[in-house]
Length: 111
Length: 112
Image (cartoon, rainbow over all chains, first blue to last red; front, side, top):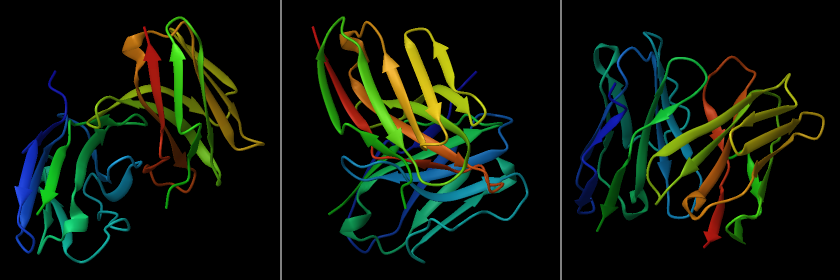
């Protein structure tokens, strides 16, 4: 079956603009995660959705970041008023049990 | 904050040699997982070892876990140029959440 997909694969935006990043998880996976990876760094946890439970937003770096997951499937990560330090690869993953399946990521560049 | 710390940060070996990467962590875990990342994009799950396991094998991969030392190692035997990638350990805590905490990774270069 299809894996996790993310769109767009690359996004260049001007400082101050809002961006939306999309994640389509594997069908049937109840958990969905967003991570951020800056150049040469590990993954920084952003937000976690599990079923119908309230999301764990403890990793969001500021109130400019928000995410939603509609119908327990597709998720959108929104960054408002982007800053240059938001430039990174944003990775989405989904899981049913322990193992996480990652999408290819969205490379965001804020100019 | 990142819990896993991989060591070394970078490793360069010749094809056919073995590669060993280490990971240390700080808090109690349910399991520890190793992932591989090519070209800075999506990660691929390699192997999962639970807190009550000490060693696990998968093909040319061997993972050990020492919960008393809060450390794990990943051994890749008979390495190939195609093994060139970044390798990350990730820990799932035992607090009831299923989030993973990733280290900064080891960049492995295997030369032909």
